Amino acid sequence: MGAPLPQIGQQGRNTLELLWARTRQQGDMPGFAKAISAILGAMRGEDDQAFNMTQTVLSDPVLTQKVLRLANSGMYSAFGQSVNTVTKAVLVLGIDAIGHLALGLKLIEELSQATPDSLSAHIEMEKAVLAGMVAQQLATSAASQNAEQAVVCSMLHTLGRMMVTFYMTDFWARLQAHGGPGNENAAAPEILGLSLEEIGYATAAHWGLPPHLISGMRPMEAAAAGAEISRADWMAGLCTMAARCADSLWHDDAAGALAVRELIERYADMLGVAPDSMAEAIERAKAMAATDLSIAPLSKPAERRAQALASTRLRAEGNRLLTSGLADMREALASASPGQMVSMALETLYQGFDFSRAVAFAHNHKEHNYAARISLGQGIKDLQPLMAFADHYEPNVFHAALNSDRVIFIENARDPKFAAKLPAWWKATLSDARSFVILPLSSNGQPTGFIYGDWDDSFPPIQLSQTEFGLINDIRALLVKAVDLRRQRAIVANKIA
Image 1 (cartoon, helix red, strand yellow):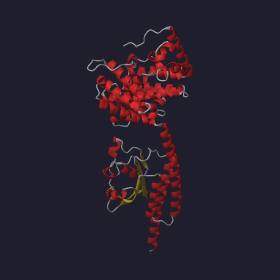
Image 2: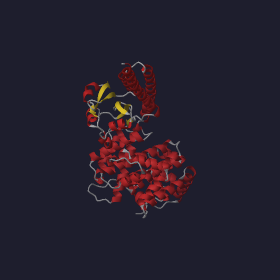
Image 3: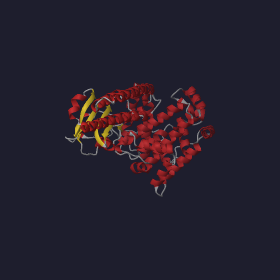
Image 4: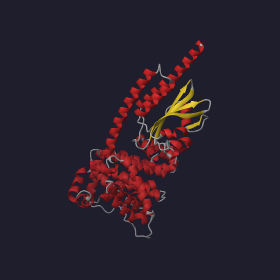
């Protein structure tokens, strides 16, 4: 399938020559082209494609991390397994999928490094990323085997706009002055000698992208109901819709929502996906975009910055409370009982980490179980009698913490892949927690209990810092010391008696 490039006149050729010159000056496009050639070579190679693809991705540390992050993202959660190596990513997702992912990620990486001061360029880049998210979710809903190809083609759909905003900002300003913002393409033939789509095709061909990807970049209007369409036209239609959805979703306003509904009605029959399923797929993409994008109004950047600042202030205040509570515990160590020390620790951790709930569990040797003894948090008292479990080993996260005597932090307790590691008693009492931490306590090498704390959805997503882990372990050390002191006093008392 040939590239959809019409005959280009002299003005258009001059524009392309200027574009290639600027990409060489401003970005590492020769290196980028080499990376694309390596990825495409690994995709079509005859000798051990899986090994070649793995080696190609691993040769670029930044690309490696991005591929692994995407392979473990919500896009691919249906695979139900953690992907920790590129080799496994290739095995799980397939050579073509990883190749297409790598191409898309490399494109965005290259463009994002080229002209970081251009707001227009960043907007086009994030719209391209959003288009890829929409395409992936739509293709998955359609049970397409080419979801990753759809991601790349959708991101490439506005490649011409991206190239002009990144490398020809002076011409972009002229296009906007002539046609008005949003109508740059109408002015392109007069000012550039070719359309923005044609610049995209020419760029893709210049990089040596295969014809099936360039074909997927074509604007494709929705076919009439019941009309037969080729696989190539289906892909171009999906990518056209994804790119237009991204443009409409960008501002997260009522006009954009109406435009998306109209796109769904127009393309549902052509793509063979029920309108309700398409709407759900786009909502999933929106949720991902709200987390991954940075300047799109959809991602509420001002609100996220405010939340981040508030969270930072909260964490700083929390660490101050932890440090103060730790000092109180050290002062009380000589006179307080182990039970009183645990109570102080629980209160300190509850306040310092702003836990939704905090519970102290004690090991009962006679009854061979662990049971909740002290609890803090709304509604937790009523649940306390239900929080008990046998001390014989079971393959779950609580026994893992007790056996290893190491603090365990669970960032996403709702991950379906993690469900098997959560015991029935936790699911019956504490399952509305999003994240939690377990502080095992031991004495003389034997578990004596543990402290549990969690956060529900009212708290922003959290990652514990090294400073906070250090404070937790300092509190644990004081509690162990309190138990050891009690044992030593008991030994002395028995000798005296």
